[in-house]
Length: 215
Image 1 (cartoon, rainbow, N blue to C red):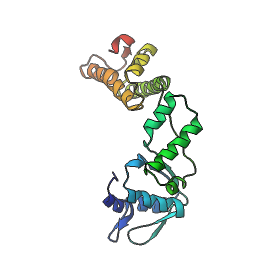
Image 2 (cartoon, rainbow, N blue to C red; image 1 turned 90 degrees about the vertical axis):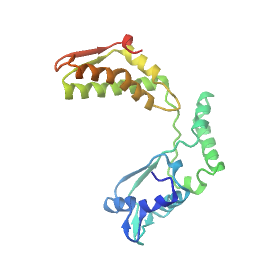
Image 3 (cartoon, rainbow, N blue to C red; image 1 turned 120 degrees about the horizontal axis):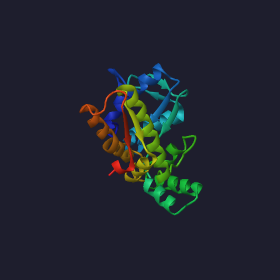
């Protein structure tokens, strides 16, 4: 949403209007602020964040100082993801991987050294493993089971073999858990919805999904 230079005014506002970010923090200074996919932001917006992290305040479009000293700031970024994947594939040491990642981000001029140094810590996340994807699939199925039981009164039962099959089909180290969510929607939710809408499943019924149903 904030990939262009002009978008900075949506954050801080101008002389005639309030900014989305500065207004929110002014009203609730004790907040958790998340910047997602930071690498997509315009360089001018990153400079704004630098002032925020360095000096603890931002001057909004009308000239007022908005304090960020009581705000916890977290940023996520996909920059350097390929480097991390290669390091994991080669079983590289975590600290070495993080060091190489920071060097890469600075060398490629993705983030300035003074910008990265303002954060209290930098954490490199490795791609999800097959086992972790299966754990996520189990949690997603459990949430779906509770939702269907609460809203439709239908008991959903998905076997461990079916979850294993789903996790294999939805495993994509580069995309994380998103393909898994789509796979559950395609293989389980759509089938369940069809049976409920057709009247085949009614309140109090149970619907079992096995590995043979996951094709």
